Amino acid sequence: MRIVLVGPPGAGKGTQATRLAEKLRIPHISTGDLFRANISQQTELGRLAKSYMDAGNLVPDEVTIAMAKDRMEQSDAEGGFLLDGFPRNVSQAEALDELLTTEGIELDAVLDLEAPEDEVVKRIAGRRICRKDSSHVFHVTYSPSKQEGVCDVCGGELYQRDDDSEETVRTRLEVYHTQTEPIIDYYKAQGLVVTIAATGPVDEVTGRALEALKRDK
Picture 1 (cartoon, rainbow, N blue to C red):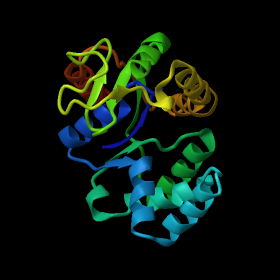
Picture 2: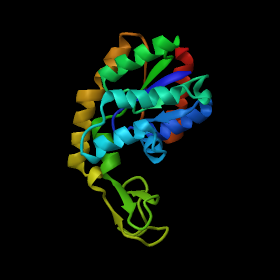
Picture 3: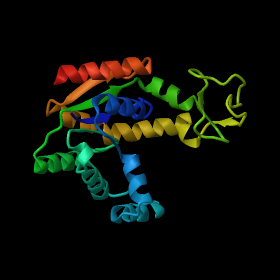
């Protein structure tokens, strides 16, 4: 299957992308991973992207699209892929359509993870990260540490990242509504959108997604 995964920040896209790709036996192609891989390998595209990032500028769509094209042309993606974080706007969606048409392939579905805005804010703003080891993550409501402000694993101080403050989260949501959400209508016009509720236990959300994709086939 060839799937695009969309949803607001905090909807659990990263978690679900990993799980769905494993279940469907297709590669998970994340924009963040693409940038990191190209930059660390010092590819031509990676150096170009880094030059924009170092200057504090957004990486142009054509660079992102070229990276995605290179990744989708690798052998493990011949049988399908799951795109996470791309396309991020309608112009990227149009470019992806053009690219896939050139390759003679089509998307099977656009999976829209739907979550109420207040729930999204609560999920992200409640996160607390360990200063000693950022892989130790807690949540003030869903998975609190035994002692407030102290990591259960190593005793490090727990803190809220600037990106996780409620004000920042609401700004990120506004960017999503303005730039990314319009691609849902774009793909609805093609009959590709499959919407599922992204609330509840992780396993249940994965199950809903797989069932919805199965019905859509």
